[in-house]
Image (cartoon, rainbow, N blue to C red; front, side):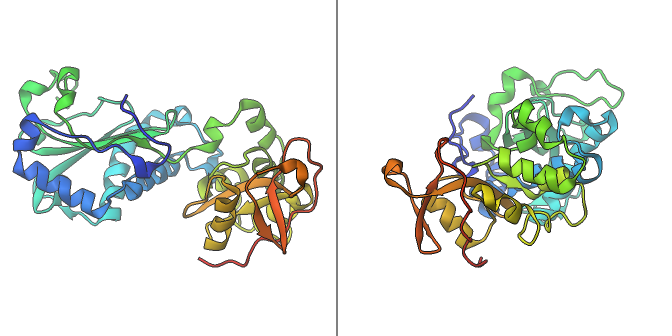
Length: 322
């Protein structure tokens, strides 16, 4: 696996040689895509949203790819193709899925790396090969000019082929092993996850989520899955939501507002991105907190609480401004 940082903005861009660098159309498509999405943030968001769409947690309570039906998994590729086209407004292709920079490009997604099923009609065309794995929280996307000698012989009724492992190095990677926004429920400690889902009350489940998944970015789909209620956002806010329910324990819940992000930055914890929340227990800064990062709230200095700090009422967060 290639080295990577902990943020999708650090997605590794790979140097290419050989046939890919001699393919003017491939390089033109590559430039067009990366111009639309220089850091891969939009691409990663589409993949996260597509997986969440399939899980449909608000209705089903599911958070694990393994719980999908076979037909749902089969449909994943089509949804990725559709959602990428919607996000980037790619034109319909003449013979393939898209036209990008005036060039026909087919799109193939696989949850198993290398499992892209290439149809016979894609021969000679460019393919956008996409992979995402919720268990690794990683994704990749690259371009390949399809050549028969680089493919395994098909043994299925559709005569679809796969790329030989020995020739995967010919893929021109746009992003390789980039960070997929975390599926928090999937990656929680099983004991903590069981505690979150133990209550019959959607509000109590959300309270437990923010209590147990502190300092982690929690997306709206996670909130929907845990609450399983149409008014899930109301269950996060104050006035009876998790924010006011957990305040007596010293827990702050920051949203994707600039003012809230500023508090997270000052405390040097994960900063919520668009549509995300981050919870953390805080304490008034005292001598034993030493040089811990501080945020000024309500005219006082606050730090991330240490395990031995007694709970105290959390301060009010700054006004909501984006």
